[in-house]
Amino acid sequence: MNHLGTNFYEAVSVILFGIGFMNLLLQNNLIKKFIGLNIMDTAVYLFLAAQGYIFGRVAPILTDGVIDASYYVNPIPAGLVLTGIVVSVSVTAFSLALVQRLYKHYGSLNMDEIMQLSREEEGE
Amino acid sequence: MEHINWIHNIPFFSIFLAMLCGILTALVKNGRVAYKIHTAMILIVGIMSGILLVNVSAKNEIFTFMMGHFPAPWGNELRAGPLEALMATTFSIVMLLTVSGGSEFIFNDVVPEKQPLYFIMLNALFGAMLALVYTNDIFTAYVFIEINTIASCALIMAKGTPQSMVGTTHYLVISLLGSGLFLLGVCILYSITGHLLFPQMKEAILEIIKTEQYRMPLLVVTGFMFIGIAIKSALFPFHSMLPGAYHSAVPTSSGILSGLVLKSYIILGIKLIYCVFSEQVMDTLKITDVLFAFGLAGMVMGSVYAMKERKMKRMLAYSSVAQIGYIYMGIGMGTRVGMTAACFHILAHAITKSLLFLCCGKFVEESGGKEKIYHMRGAALRNPVAGIGYSVGALSMIGIPLLAGFISKIYFATASVFSSGKMAAVLIVLGVSMVLNALYFLPSVIAIWTPEKEAEIRPRPSISPAFAVSIVGFIILNFILGICYRPITHIIQMSIELLVQ
Image 1: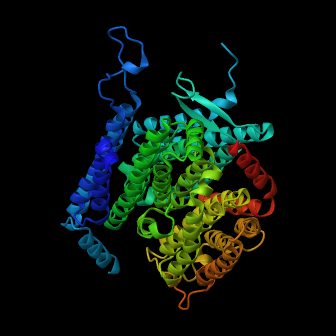
Image 2 (image 1 turned 45 degrees about the horizontal axis):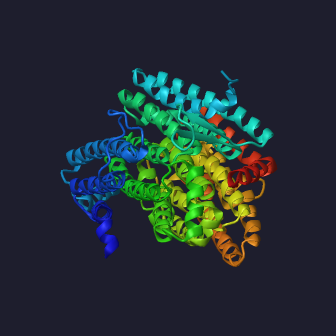
């Protein structure tokens, strides 16, 4: 339990990841499915941000002349978060565009229904 | 300034050229021009990769290329050895043959104003695959995995039919699950090793194994990453995205996706095994055994599903599932001989499956869009080039001597001798799987060569020269890999030894 207290953010982010993952996998509504994707990705960013921050340290920008490394935090996790956000934004945009086209054609957001309609169409 | 080694710039330049052509193509309005830019780019990359292959395999060297001006533990790196060069060369050749042979499908099936966009995606996909092959940095690998995913989804939906959109959605969702798991794995791995570059990570992981600290997180991370890669490369229980996607896509896209894209993830996996986790760690964590079991299951189940299928393209998609099973079986043996067989099968499957998809696309087109195998009767007689291509591809997949598929099966069988406790399983499943392969491929070959009963007199379709050249190219490649396979397996063996160091 002690470990859970110290790694509070990490534990929460892994739980969030699980929620997002299952949403993306099992949710039938396409919009909610891709909301699940965003929860999943955001959980990973929370994990990285929590790992990258050390209490009492500052961003590695030299302003008051301190060159001691223990005064600063590692900037790479923040960089990774930014890269990840770019990736997830583009994936989300792509998926939503796809969902919109599916909705225009089938008039539904339910994946099962769409699969059903598509099979019927193909069977003709 | 020190002497610049031009050869060492090839990996970076190949990726850069592919991405640059993607940007240039965005300015082009005409599909034909975009096609020319694309093929010229692949030709240049192919030649450069060939030069790189000859150089690194002659010198027996593996080198790293520093990106930007930050040295090793901080900067970003590419790394190339004989394996990477061999894969890049094969990818270029297969891509060139598939795109040039399948150009008619692209121009017929994709709306004219979207054709340049299709080629942008092909350029991005090619660049991303090269980056996955060459990268030495795990986060770069993740980013290019996502680029690969988006580009492949765009290639599937290029046809614009409702079916292709449904297929794309399915493919996208499953792929995103895979890359999500991989991303979480990367982040946790970064937090326990403190590095993103492969060699530094490897040192840290060996330290973790020695001190027993963080052993459990390491197991979880390895699990996440390899399940992620397995999902992306459609290993058996995660294969459900393939049939719908390949069935509804343009045949050229299906050929590239099945022949190359799935393989690029596996190559990343192989690099992770040797350069990050090391054989010893994979063995202690029992990850190889898990991959082995799923590989065996995939070999049988893929073929069983393929037998049940009446539509040719879906049958080929399920056959890919079985072939991916073979590759994972080779990786799962946990020996270098097994890995050699797996790498050889990557090449063999790449040149064969693209050929099969192109020929199948031609048959479907000629039978007026009907896709079931019994609609294809006499298709080979109407179009002998595609018929011979399909037959050679099918025979190679079954494992007939003189063809590429035979050699990889021989290597799998021989490799099984060296992995204790797995020999019986490998040999039995290999035998069963080959029989199953024959059971679903032979009827389709017989069907295409059987004349139609009520022979309607249809005009003989004209066979475009580009299609004929690419089919003949694939057939020749199949025979080359089936007959002169020694130098290639030698390069693979050598490169695995180099990767381990």
